[in-house]
Image (tube, rainbow, N blue to C red):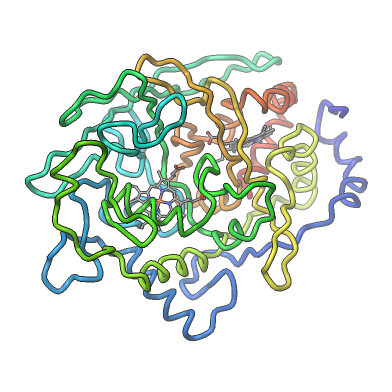
Length: 408
Ligand code: HEC
Ligand code: HEC
């Protein structure tokens, strides 16, 4: 594909592109209206959603707390007491992501090079909080250094490169092959659309598109992040040999009643995708053309087909919801700091405009990128060509592409 040097040239190509890719129909409903729902809800569905909202937002408590049957069962080890503590009203996690103790919504998952889960003495997630009398599993610290480079036109750039030393672990050292998998809480709006996407394989949720369904992802969240059992996860994330955890009192079997579990699913399915903030018409068209021409839309696809939602054939999540290898720079690392090949789901770009309006951006799977420009410069591996095409643009064209992405 030819790459015009500056965007005024691209403007000339717009009519052609516009004809090839008509503006897609998107279920954007705008944010800020607490009554807004992604899809129409009848009265009964609305009641269930409202219960889900209350459960999502409420701090859960230890098993046996009087009068708290619906929200007990927390821990004994956990990362946060409510979904909302990490998921921030359905929007992406709050920061800051800076040197120091890893913040609560930045979860340290533990894996192995072969991808086996639960091989660690601490289970799939290092839990940084515990009920009184129980030891926390461990904590991670964040340490940044810098990576400097230049665009072909000589303009310098700088990236922050994170490391995640594990400070303290409670009982047993982490086995040598352990892979540290830092993951920040992503937004949870638009979940009904991600569920409905027609994809070649079932995996679609999480930063790696490893999880096939919203119910499965929700059960994992309850078990791994809150130590709460549900119909799909009858055990919390205790890890091998942690008897105190395995034998701790429970708040019912399972701890989340089925109807409450369904309510939390209904809430997530109802959360609307925030509206885009388009640029002025000419810049919007030119920015979109640049996005397509530099190859971003090879993964951040313009349209994704959906099944089973009346009146909706495609969505624009700006993602193919498939996983790609973006190279060693973004890959997870083992304890010896060796990168392990890691595939990440193309991050949906919807909601970026709303996220920027609320708080400084925390992009990529661990929130390391504080701007769209930094996020792009971390792209390698399968995205190397797109990244190079971006770097080769003029400063004006790069700035336009960045502003356009910020408007999604
Ligand atoms: C301690 C922080 C934390 C808590 C508490 C938490 N989550 Fe998450 N959530 C995360 C992280 C981190 C991820 C990314 C996990 C991954 O990619 O493996 C995630 C991912 C998700 C996703 C996938 C979104 C997507 O785009 O694929 C959903 C859905 C979700 N969480 C729902 C919930 C629900 C429901 C609760 C409460 C029952 C909850 N989470 C509690 C941190 C948290
Ligand atoms: C080969 C597929 C691929 C191509 C091509 C690609 N991306 Fe991405 N992009 C990804 C993946 C995968 C991630 C998630 C990486 C991670 O989680 O660390 C991502 C993440 C991002 C993010 C961060 C979003 C967030 O919410 O954290 C931005 C912004 C972004 N890409 C913009 C672009 C732009 C602009 C281009 C074109 C210059 C581009 N990407 C090209 C696959 C791709």
